[in-house]
Image 1 (cartoon, rainbow, N blue to C red):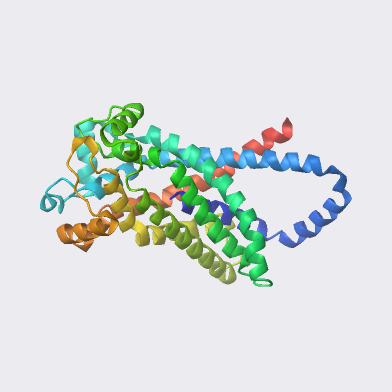
Image 2 (cartoon, rainbow, N blue to C red):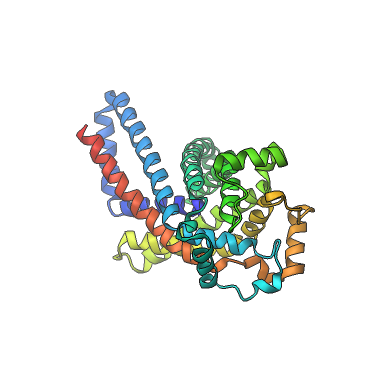
Length: 347
């Protein structure tokens, strides 16, 4: 989801500026020529803009996660069904049935179980991914543009690979928080982990330090394809739509294409996401390990015991989460960016 949001925000911003591109470009060149002596001032403004974007993106992501936390928790609970339970008893499970069980057994607030660590994960994840993306972009631009001189797809490749590498870097740096969030959200009525600190301490004590990195390989395999699919689908749909209906609202265009790209990405990478969730829960709560043969062995075991449908257990709440999540992030990001820009200008 983080990757999809980044694509929508960046693509939406490009779309919003496209109508005025030629005029702004010519004016900018003239202005820079006349104001070359003020480079230090411009650099300072650029740095302020970077901080604003970083803050807006982090808050928007955390707010979106909070709003869609109930659907995110339902997705996780469905994904781990059958791991330690009788698969036959899970075949009749439905979103409404599971939601009712949470309210009756755990209370309404339980929909946000693990959301605090989600927010704690989201803020540094946004920071790392934003900073890493800028660094990778600077590194890749001269290499790719030199190799593909005059090719219009050069910038697309820079964003494609830069975004993928940034996502992998951010996921690796903040992975323990992601694992703890999964374990807290997967708890039902029995509370084995009493909070973020207790979860970290218990995992390190019972499973060792590297227990905080269970399922990292599967997670990194999800991040790369997810960004690739999201970016490719988003850009293709946006270009096709603009060529057919150039008069349509750019905001609605970005929102619609971003949602469709999110659905496409979720469908393609959901089995890997399910496997990584289950691998994150290996040994949780002192339970015996289920998947002992790595990612491929986990895949074979799930297909053998639950069938191919088992790889898509929980896909419906994931679909329901994609559209509002993208919409909330996009609107919150733009609102905060405008607000912070006004504060910076007035000060």
